[in-house]
Amino acid sequence: MGTAAIVPADLIAGNFKLGIIAARYNDDIVSALLDGACNAWRARGGGAGALRIERVPGAFELPLAAQTLALTGTVDAMVALGCIIRGETAHFEYIAAECAHGLQRVMLETGVPVSFGVLTVNTLAQALERAASDSFNKGAEALETALAMAALLRRLK
Figure 1 (cartoon, rainbow, N blue to C red):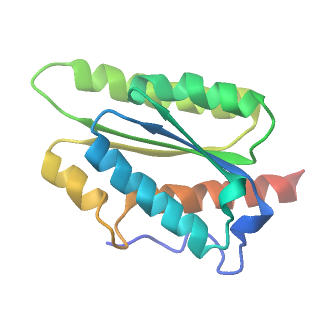
Figure 2: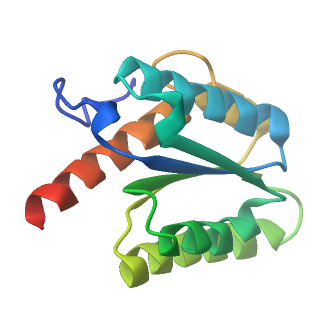
């Protein structure tokens, strides 16, 4: 199952400023998601100067960085990228739930869309599949979702 046509073919990334907040934890996976997002940005005509990329230690820190960037007023939307792989303890559930909840709060409290590109998977193999450099890359999908939401909010305002 590849990425769906989330955004109209004529949506131009160059019309927007986006931020990407990416976790360093599970860096090999997150870097592949980041590559996918950056490739999607360029494919949609986005310029390097309109894409801000910041790194945080892990998925738990994504909401604070996203909120801080949203409050600067310099981005139309953001992409949060991370990878949480289930382990033998309940740690997975706490981090995944709080990351998702925190990013949703950022969106609702600031009005800046935050696309959820955080993998929450059971195995490393599942993460690798979702970070592959093909149409399954969830970083690219998250970038396209952020663009679609930025365009929608601009039309609604």
